[in-house]
Length: 133
Image 1 (tube, one colour):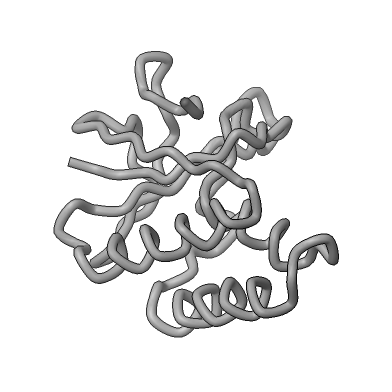
Image 2 (cartoon, helix red, strand yellow):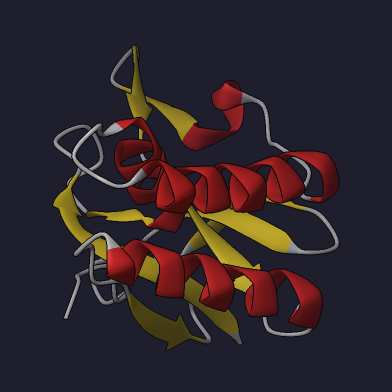
């Protein structure tokens, strides 16, 4: 089973709703939110930067008709309990900024383009859940 934290923000590049980290960057960088909240979000992001491997950007792309297309989306592996727990903490902070994050799960994320101990990057199938709400 795989778990994804999804925001209401839509990615024009991939055609799916963005994940939790893009939303966290938005809230962290938005001056409308109190500094203490942005600092807490920054601390969570820094923790993930330290402990969650960051796949190379090329992993998110596939070649089709001679062109590279960004198609990969990230999913946590269900056994990555510490990562998932921290993502729930980040979700709570983003909620304080007014950014509602939902959690979706699937056993069939699509074509797996990358995997490590905690996560995968997959090209979703048309039946893969990718929408917020």
